Length: 231
Image 1: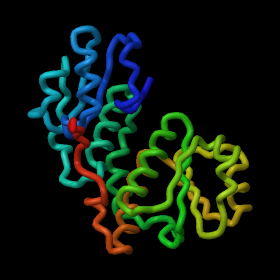
Image 2 (image 1 turned 45 degrees about the vertical axis):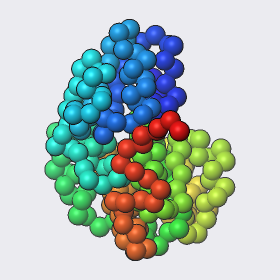
Image 3 (image 1 turned 90 degrees about the vertical axis):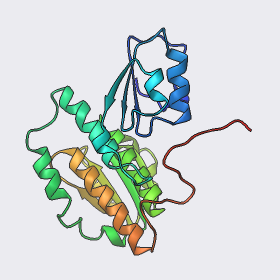
Image 4 (image 1 turned 135 degrees about the horizontal axis):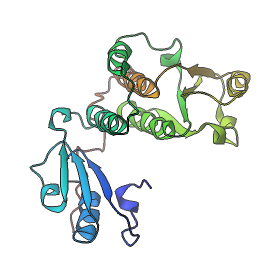
């Protein structure tokens, strides 16, 4: 099961809970860990162990080298995902070298001219699609959405037209590319590891932000950590 910390069902029994928190100070994460303390084992992946999370977690996995100054998370989130994939034996041996190439290879033609972006995924890459859409909204203030690929055809495809882009993470369902092309939208599908597509989507967010004179590392209305205080 996977939840945003604010939606975690603390009354549901689990053998183990894994929490991800770059800052170690996010209120919702700390509240969950405090509620589980002493009754459900917890493991926390964090970039900063010298924070309140240290006293609430049963075990810490510290990725301090993956911390970042930017409000928008790219390095930590991608590193945590890579760690989990490698732990499960699902990390291709060549993906690091290919990720370096993805940092410099040209973006798909026509993307920077689009005004609306839809990211699609299947299985685990649905989460990657949502992450890509979030980064686009945060860094570039872009109109973005994310869906499971098959669900896209049940309604969201109705907004696709010229000037929009539909970006598939992973293998597309049969016939979807043709359907998107029929709307006039730009279809983007890259072969290979889905994580590389996320890297390229992060680059797209930065380039779109800079074109608008925005600072992609400092999105409006956002802070590095959400800390709620009683009034």
